[in-house]
Length: 486
Length: 103
Image 1 (spheres, rainbow over the protein chains, first blue to last red):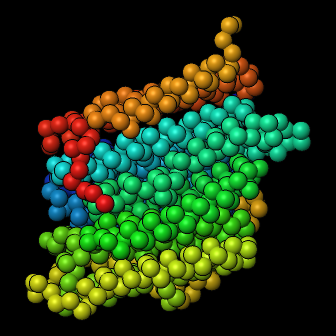
Image 2 (image 1 turned 30 degrees about the vertical axis):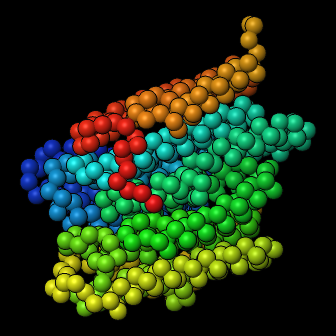
Image 3 (image 1 turned 45 degrees about the horizontal axis):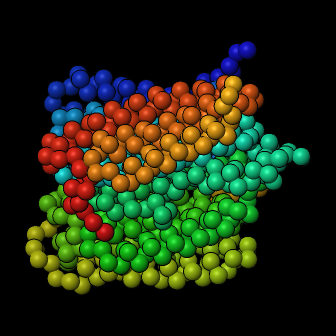
């Protein structure tokens, strides 16, 4: 028996992995000023991978002995991951320069490896592959979170992230072992068919143990997206990690985890749909309230954005509580457009802390006088984060709330709206600091050109998709149709 | 064979619980990581037991266990690196001393 491997389908991930190894090698050859060449190599790798992903976007099939799947869903999430990784590498160039560290190669290589893991997560159709992909992403992002070796806060970030992440993945594996034990399969499609097969004993007789397995299997992904009982690491890691890596953690592992959750739930365990609906309703309500209420009390902008990203996870989980095509396409739109305003907001935080400020809200006092460009763009990102209409943040939320009302969960949509109103308070509070409070120092803030480039790209994305969301909504609808699980 | 599948599952559940309890209560990073390693090994017992007693696509469970061992070896390497980093910067490896950031 030969194993059938279609290398064309594997190409984007292979390019990213080989690019990571090349970055590590070139790191040895350049002696000084190696930051820009390495970053250029990284971005070129990611662009090639994005091109290859688009090239295979029309096709469907499996590869590597049915372990990886190529379908519109995985292509969509791979593109989200690649685009946001490019933005984060651009964001890192000036930041790393100012750290004056010697270990540059690792930084870019680990970003590439972690992104390759995230791409595998988006494409996986097998529990074994899923575990390997998850750990590839996790190990990369653990090390990146602790990249500033001599900063005690960064040490604390990696310690907390690592220990809690290990416990979460041990729980996930315990769940996987029960799923394997009761169904006899590790492939999601076979698991699903053995659960729903006529005369199947699994759902009826060992219901409880199997359900415990499903709930445990989801733990590592709750951890990655920061849903509430597993959210404690978020503010500390977001504060301690280097700011571009904070942006990385708030976008890429999350996008991959949402892709995995969609695949696990819709392809693997549709037999348990009534049970996980209730689970996600409870989780969504808790996540939204904890995220938004804790964000009200924060004085550090990175912690505030951390809690706000917990709240965002709550809105997205609401899409899983409502099982419909519109809810799933709402999740896709939310995750895709999130990259623009989330990375944009973190780009401004990076630009400010790079120019000698710290990350407290007081440092944003009178930003409008010191740098009108940063203040205005930050204001646009804040509107988008709050989810108000003329920006990209509105559409994902609107689709998910609409799906909730359609699905008879109108009260869940009302809770979501209440939370949106709470969130407007702390976003506008940042705007108040920027526009109304007088600055302590008066000198202008200089923004390096790379930050400006990232901020321009993200602000154009935020406004453009906010005004003309038709294209992305159409794409997400096609992807959901191609997913075919509903 | 004298042991049955349910005995193996009870053993695994016991090892997993001991690991979780230790990970949540111990202070030293090294011992916390050792306890987490127990949790991984409980999973391995589960997988191998299921594979042994079911026979259905049995090889997958055993392969899965080998993959878990390999990945957790990588994780232990990282854990030691973190412990050394923490000792250099703080002079201690107790997790409750990592309290710069709260709430």
